[in-house]
Amino acid sequence: MARIWLLVFLTTTAMSTFAQKFGYVDTNYILGRMPEYKEAQAEIEKLAKGWEQEIQAMYQEVQSMEANLKAEEVLLTVDMREERQSEIDRRWGEIKEQQKQIFGFEGLYFLKKKELIKPVQDKIFESVERVAKNNRLQIVFDKSGDLVMIYTDPIHDYTDYVLEELGLEQKQNSN
Image 1 (spheres, rainbow, N blue to C red):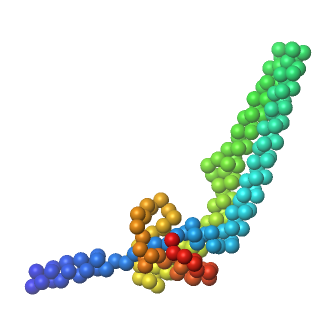
Image 2 (image 1 turned 180 degrees about the vertical axis):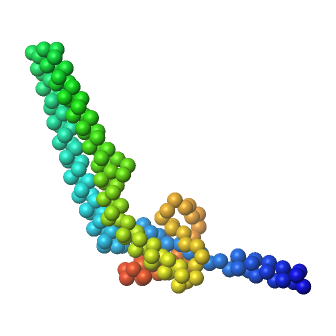
Image 3 (image 1 turned 135 degrees about the vertical axis):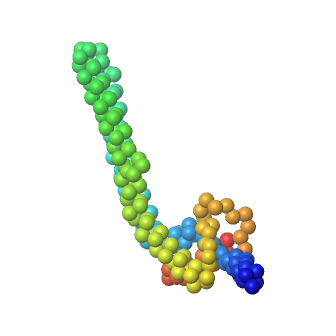
């Protein structure tokens, strides 16, 4: 009797393994269709451009200081030259620190991007989860991620379902 239950258990387990259903979505495509993502990207680009201009102005100021030092070098005492060079070195350090605070790991750019894009990504992931549950999918891959998909059968593409779940227009052609 125990052997029969073991056989039934193994058969059921094997059948459920084969019955797993999977699908994939293209989140880059979905993001490209979302107006709020495009707005977030535009705001991030605008901020980055402003920060780049600010840093560029700082660079130009220090380069001007260096040019002035070089032009006046013969007229300055050793102490004056060293004092100016020390100021220039300090300013280069400030520029590097400013770049790090803005564009470095966990800098303003990173934090602002996270602040603006994360809600959009969360919205997609919640929609993917709902689509997966509605279609009884155990696994959903992201076609646009690092996962390399050599072949994809369009029957497993659930991108349109996620677009529909988000209230966005479905794509015209299959990828």
